[in-house]
Amino acid sequence: MGLRAWMERLIRRLKHDPAYTLSPDLSTGDLWAIIWERGWAFVRGLWWRPRLRSSAGAFFVGRRVRLVHPRRLTVGRGVTLEDDVHIDALSRRGIYLGHSVTIAKFTVIEATGVISNLGEGLEIGDNSNLGDYCFVGAAGGVHIGRNVLVGQRVSFHSENHCFERADVPIKEQGVTRQGIVVEDDCWLGAGSILLDGVTVGRGSVVAAGSVVTRDVPPYSVVAGVPAKVIRQRNERAAEG
Image (cartoon, rainbow, N blue to C red):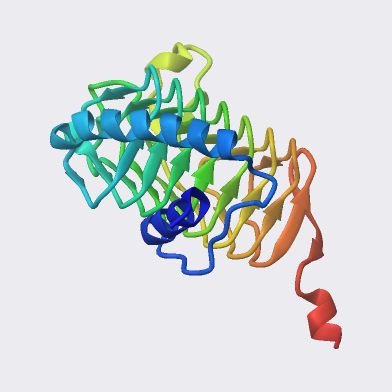
């Protein structure tokens, strides 16, 4: 069995995707470089696995990854944490990363702001990803469904500061928490911001740079500050 066929077979098993194929443009040198990087990531994952709440299978960990309170972190099969990821899993429900989830470089996940009031936590469904430099503030709870694409520098803020009184410092007025939900098969464009209390409906697209302050109906495309519906993805199908 050639190197390319062996790699395809291995990835198909890890992803449970019998149709997965490698690009024909990859050279043998490229393949060996990928094997070298993924091999070391696998070894680092072996070191972390006994420290987690649980792990369902192969776990790939990049360089300089920091996991705080790993006993509250659950990972599925084939999870990848790329270089310089920071995850603090301290929270009531902890953090769950489903099968084949990828957390890209320099992403920060914080499940609790202050230890006097633990956060709710984060759940990411199978085959979803967070792009480079994302921030997830999961104090109010963040749920991301399956097959969700999250671009670079997307941020989630599931907690708000109360500020009604002018005679009391804002930091002493407490917080409100409603949580954020992103349903299955969504795409959140680069630089978008999701604020506490919003639900992004199944199959929706959030344009790059948008600020989502209210619920997004299923199969919508939203854009702007604040984000507004500009069209429905399924409107052509409905017309037909």
